[in-house]
Figure 1 (cartoon, one colour):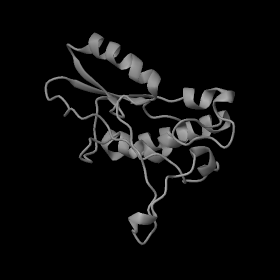
Figure 2: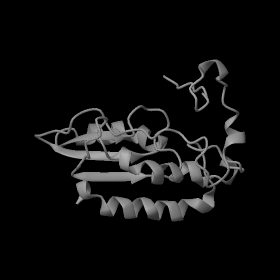
Figure 3: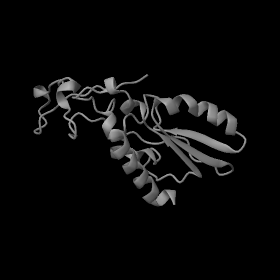
Figure 4: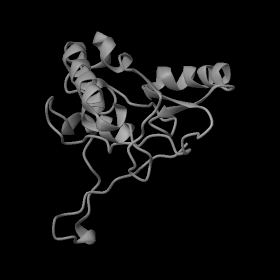
Length: 164
């Protein structure tokens, strides 16, 4: 797989003063945007013109079952996962709120209009031991944030013009 290595450069752009970012545990305070991951995009394959299009958005659990859904529906639908990349998916629900608009777009920014959109989040918020504040953004979130964040994701999806 691939990974991203970041270097912090002061506002003036002086690369000789570049520093390695501090540990993620030192960066994140619940509710802060410091240390958050970059939003990923939806699937790279253009939607089918001859079959229905199914978009599954979610965390690593949905990455695991997407190939099985795709195999079962192959004759009638093109099934794809978002985010694309196989790296853990859509992470915790806070990541979902911040990135859902990107997750339902093609890599070129085009809004996607699937015939069926299925989504799941939960494991990254579900285990009380998964997040002992400070939580690592893009990896875990407190269980108490799950329902309120999930409701915001649903509201966004219901209002998204491309999904109407």
